[in-house]
Length: 289
Image (cartoon, rainbow, N blue to C red; front, side, top):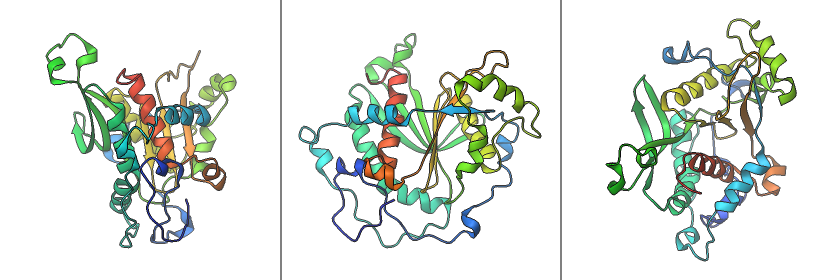
């Protein structure tokens, strides 16, 4: 994240190359909040046993290719909200409030330009069957004239993707790292997982419960795209081709992302990664091309 002096907020378009600002936050012992266990509704959900790396370069390229030209889109020349001095990241709700202003706002302005037919809604705390309440869910509604055609899947309301928020310092790469493997060794990695107690997976500590929650959303909403964000880090799940078959497994793809100085130097930020994640999801559902 950038730590720049006070200055005029970036434009919507320019913000996709700019890191999130550092905000005041409550210190966390050892820089880690230990989540002992998940909610009862996710206790018995199977989490992925292992994952392969998603392609950050290819994903970001997809998002950049869909970022509208500001010369042709006046909305993208508007500026972000002014940075408030009242932020203190102490609870998950504090993370959500900041993210709505500085992360979701520019993202949703761009998404509204990309979806030409129908409407994309960014829904907060929406509840679905099975006790599935998502922090942020993007839902596509086709044009009303098309909704009556129940036989055509392209004309149905569709859940597109989910973004789940966590309090600061809950996501930690070392909790996910044991589950990473290259595709050539996927079969052995899955076989090893069955012998790991108590969850039969390579994920550890917070990554177990975060992933169980993501898998619950994916299964209940029939989506493949879930991301989790705690202001300092993001983990993106791409579950489209996941099949943890012991004989011939196809692993889920996972992407760990932080705004490192290298990434910021290349203009790779939380905003462009999240936009790219949503562009891929929209294309997957045939909403955009």
